[in-house]
Amino acid sequence: MIEKIKEILANHKDISGYKIKETTIHSNELFFVKKNVDMDRAKRVHHYNLTVYVDFTEDGMNYKGSSNTDIHPTMNDTEIESAIRETAFAAKFVKNPYYPLVQPAESQQASALSAFAKESFPYWMNEITKAIYKNDIYEKGGINSCEIFLDKIETRIVNSEGVDVTDTGYRCMIEFITTWKEEGEEIELYRRIDCSDFDEELFAEEVKNMITICRERAIATSTPALKTASVILTREAVKDFFSYYYSKSNAASVYNQSSTWKVGDQLQGKEVKGDRITMTLDPFMKNSTDSESFDSEGFPLKPVKLIEDGELKRYAADTRYAYYLGVVPTGNIGNIIIESGSKTIEELKKEPYLMTTAFSDFTVDTMTGDFCGEIRLATYFDGRTTTPVTGGSVTGNINELHHELYLSRERSKDNNFEGPAMIMLKNVTVAGIAKD
Image: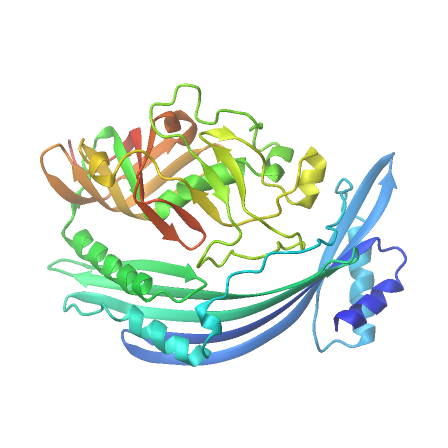
């Protein structure tokens, strides 16, 4: 099919370039209600996505217009021709400043082999199920529903400059809802796990953790109105927090003026009381669904350090935005590594704190640095006693607080993020629902 598309493209002299992305996805899916299988299905999806580029000049400015369309395997030559003609016409109305397409590379590093490649999907679905339900052993609570998705994804990217690269990856997604009931209302919490490799301990422990969180939420009291407090973020909130630095150090954000960061900036200010941030992007991170040997444009990837000891060293940039800013491209890399800090978790907990465990929603505005979260479960330590609490919210602004940011020595991993298991921020606003 790719050769057929290329032949038809060759007849369109108004097209300056193209990119064809071929994707084949083999999937198995299992759906459970409590411990009973509700549905079991498998499927195979094969499709092509074509992007065409049209270079043109207008009022002395050079532009590269682009548009894309899906080419289905069942389409005949006439249908493909029509789709290409319509896409090329649409590309002429897109006024992106000119940029070059990705060029072929001499070599590319292969992605790590997943355990999922060594056995059949039915075998792994059974193993995942056993791991997920291993710790579902309690009378008052457990897994209410669960969905397991396992995909094998084969990708090939071909472009008009001679790029022709292929890769195979695996994506496992597990969604489950845990519940717990004491004397009052039944507590229900949702969790999603994404990974690219089998990890029995990860699956079993995450279910155990969520059941524990449900149980503690069932006995939690109201969050006190602290006004401000030292807040310890854990779990998904840590990952969300560092998405701000990932976004601000991206060349696209700089070019679009949603980031004013410049290489050489001391991002946390000159007077830092806590830990300085060091951030690396690693396209070969183990057990991440974002690990790949090339990006969506076919650019070969390798690890790159963006921030070191709080200083911005370089931008993350695909070929297009690297060209606009005049910097060396890194390609689009989705895996983030944050270095550990100076304090152990035990040391972080020596002073009064509010440690968040679960939010109804935790949001970080990657343009302004504002963050907020409605507390589903937290632990409050007043200097003497420790109490599980619920309700209220935490709010703050990263730019105003990260001069005194403490990162734990202990580490954790969540799919495409690896970093401190906990982080502490001082003087975070806490809106409680109980009097101090």
